[in-house]
Length: 221
Image: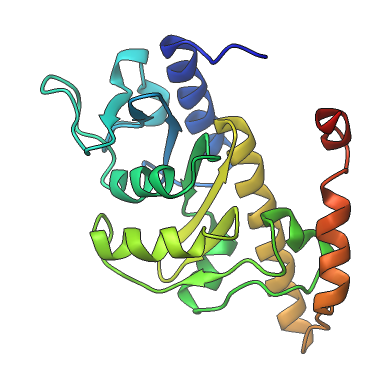
């Protein structure tokens, strides 16, 4: 069994992911946040610090009671839904939240992403759902996010952005990038007319095939 990453390795992975998120245009400015699970709780990006200026010591530990060390930087304002998602799903190892352009545009239009393309199944289901709006950083928003991620690995957040979860920060970022690509394609399709939605039966076939797609088949052995 592969040993879990050290604290410094996890901090490095979070910083690299946050910087890649910004460089790829998935979250402009200082928006968005990245976290990773630890035995005690999580490590998360600090509030308001430019990603290109982040140092290992800037990444904030938050325990499962929502407490950060007294001398640490202030954690991201969205720390609550990160922590609650880890509590709700023990399989999640990392979370990426972005304000990517197309996903956010759909979220502001209050539109989920239906099965217009088979790759929608990359988020773990027949659609990429939209969760209701609530003020950022609140327990109400956290409740909505946890519900949205109950049976999905990504969701849109009304009038806000998107969130993606995976085993590692890098994998969560790749999923967020895929959601953004799908969001752009869906907007393009809507501009052409009514999209043709794949049936639930077909999406169930795709979801099952994804379980053995690429390297997943090797991991299952």
